[in-house]
Image 1 (cartoon, rainbow, N blue to C red):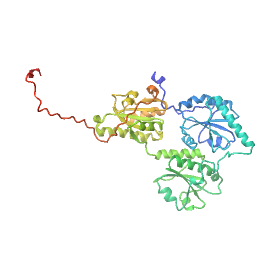
Image 2 (cartoon, rainbow, N blue to C red; image 1 turned 30 degrees about the vertical axis):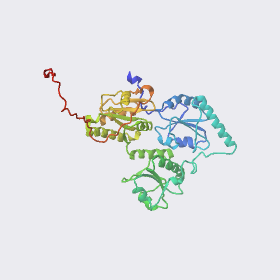
Image 3 (cartoon, one colour; image 1 turned 60 degrees about the vertical axis):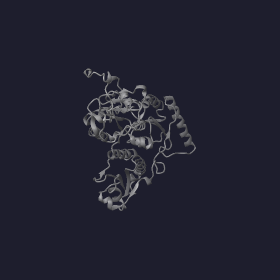
Image 4 (cartoon, helix red, strand yellow; image 1 turned 90 degrees about the vertical axis):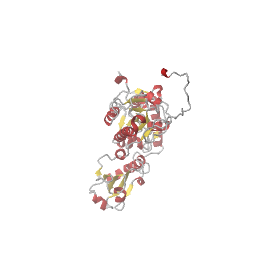
Length: 435
């Protein structure tokens, strides 16, 4: 019955919407064509499959889409799968609804209710405003331009024969470089997409992935070095590796998605933190879809070497699953008794591990071995939506106590106080045979 009643921490990767619905499923591959280049008014929901509020919105979103068919376009983006699109439009929570009107480059936040009637009313109000603007002669751009496209030419690094080696080959950053010719029509079409992507990538990767451009008609030395024959040609450069050809799409969404994938591949694994106070747990878990927490044996039971062995296993797993952007925490047995009790592991069974979804107040326990193989199997099952879960009692996280950080050393038993018994005399009537 557990498998029937249990609700998975991570839902299977499946869309809320199907081809039979009137909701248009949007991805980085079709977003530019369907939305940006369209003259239609769009209401677009950015959702995550694991989000309960998104699941609740789905039937009303479908109903509104059917009511507005042929009048206003209703779309949906799985922003958990297509993080580049969500990041591009500043999506921070789910569900987020945006109205893409006259100026598709600057969508507005939808502020209305979430019932199907409220959505239809909001869409019709936006449509009336759009028509009124058109009647008065106002018109937003339905395509990209450098002023309103979310980026500008300054976000693209101009590369030349003189600075290419120093900036690209000798630097530590990952580069996507476009080789173009000013007279090339495809290059002109790519320019606003490249600029918008450059701005988003710079912000989201903290400058660790950069976009550059080389005018191959002027800087022929570097262009001929890499055998540039057609325009635009995009190449990816990683320090110490041979450049590779970029084979993806040419929309900003496609470019951003590839850049973020490379950033994830090169980013360090998430930091493994000891739960020293409530703030550490709260920040780590609230910023992540899942929080992986280990309760390790007391230091007196394992010593420093044993504990470091467990921590090494966890760090290897955090590296393996770093693209998931999960949080990784650990605590010593007995240090956070209320947390252990709420997870059902208090007092025995160390080391133990739980995966927690604080948004849904659910958790799953590692049932296999605390090893690379056992943990990998546990996390893999969660990743595909399998495995039974339980709900935190009371619907909230347990109390977290402030504790001292482990000093990295072996544990020591408390020193017992010595007592001087030399001046203590036994009672003369004491019968030693009673011992």
